[in-house]
Image 1 (cartoon, helix red, strand yellow):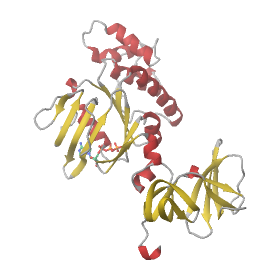
Image 2 (tube, helix red, strand yellow):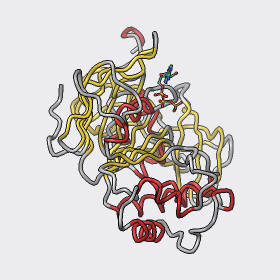
Image 3 (cartoon, helix red, strand yellow):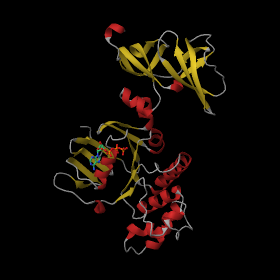
Image 4 (cartoon, protein in one colour):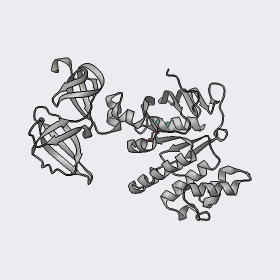
Length: 353
Ligand code: ATP
């Protein structure tokens, strides 16, 4: 097992949890660093919510240990209940108390603290909701309710904040805006946070690091750039963004492919499939480069996506290029590689190479 840094806010070691025959979490080990936002990312059912619920104390693990701020809160002998873990929770449905005002909701976790009033005011200022203290949840927009939920979770000064798909109830336009606000609030509050999401863009924009999970297990952990540019598997590559794969022969730091000699992010040897993200490909008017035919395009304002079919191979490639040039379906173009590729062992049988 990899060493987990001791100064971490949360350490999970070999966490396991099954529901009947379903192994929801398989030997997950990870560490949340102080002040960071870690995004737990993966497809539906991969076990990310269960990891969050285990850390929160809402589920009891079958095995493994959880340490929060140096204190073991769960292992074979200890199981601290959720309310003693100093953890703030924000769920996708916000779970605000409908019969309480905004101020009462935010004060909920503060008990009889003498600084209750000041703390509520400070939290509402932090989330930009001053003046709405006396409103009830149904009198707020979705984005405002989300911010109340965040203020309520942060008010008791939790050691960590756990957010489970906090933006999934918001429409697309609002989601981006609230996401930016939440990022600012988390940074300002200096809180360590774990965010569960199945949305790769959300994980990349909010996570200082991303823990990618598949089938109950941790698959890769690293910065958004690590995961996008150096995915450890084809599956991780495809989950993190649009992926083109071309076959080739690797010789150390380069691979020879139908698109010419491609620089590799990491050295490799022999038969490989090379991952090329759409933005490392460019097109020209077929003066040179590898010949291809435009099979479709999508104009996105600042950018455009163009699909091209290679003349000598069945593959269709997705190219992300500037919006300036106008490409017509059926037009013959030249394809060029302008960045690095990532090599994976070839999936083709040896006799087809
Ligand atoms: P989603 O994004 O859809 O919420 P997830 O990655 O968060 O998915 P989990 O909710 O952790 O996944 O679920 C992991 C697996 O465990 C799934 O197969 C799920 O059906 C199962 N599971 C989770 N909670 C329970 C439960 N209380 N009882 C039975 N099975 C459960």
